[in-house]
Amino acid sequence: MVKISPSILSADFAILGKELCALEEAKADYIHIDVMDGRFVPNITIGPFVVEAVHRVTTLPLDVHLMIEEPERYVKEFADAGASIITVHAEATKHLHKVLQDIRSAGVKAGVSINPGTPISFIKDIIGDIDLLLIMSVNPGFSGQSFIPASLEKIKEARALLDANGSKAELEVDGGIKTGNIKEAANAGADVFVSGSGIFSAGEYKKTILQMKVLAEGERV
Ligand code: DX5
Ligand code: ZN
Image 1 (tube, rainbow, N blue to C red):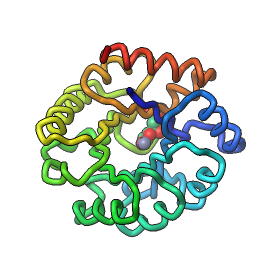
Image 2: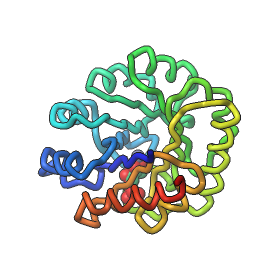
Image 3: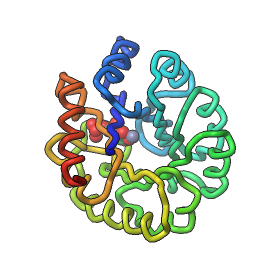
């Protein structure tokens, strides 16, 4: 079964509680939370405080995507705030193996992400230490960007690497995913799909999420 992880970066923050209820009702699988520090990426967004508030109003697992320098400094805060998955960028830490271990020790699933310019080979030595591999299909920092077509090849490479290592880690893709291209990403081997503008600007969350699942599943049946 594929999973849809709506990115609340595209939600209306003035009515965030309502947006979260609507996503749960729309059968989202995860809630994707984009944490940005103004250093690893230019934008500044959400901190542990908001994650804790989100955790209080939804039962969905929180898929926390840290786009911050030295993520090891904040693992405990995000774990305590209720994250189910904490994903760090391989480019953002000098101690990737250690931070992944710290995430798992905190009782949270450990994810690693790579930017469009980072080769898959960069994370091959920690493949046994992750529960999720996130391939960025845009340069991180903002919602609403276009999917980078070369990401499809990268997803295929990632799928091959996970399979070759007998890894059960989920393969997630993030950036520019819409009903128009989800099928190709699924076909390349992704099984968790983040979508911000693709869900929120479509308006009807339930219809869009169902449509995304049908399109992505189609490749698997
Ligand atoms: C980008 C974020 C994404 C983004 C997705 O830095 O990590 O999660 O919010 O938004 P869309 O689907 O609009 O590209
Ligand atoms: Zn993200």
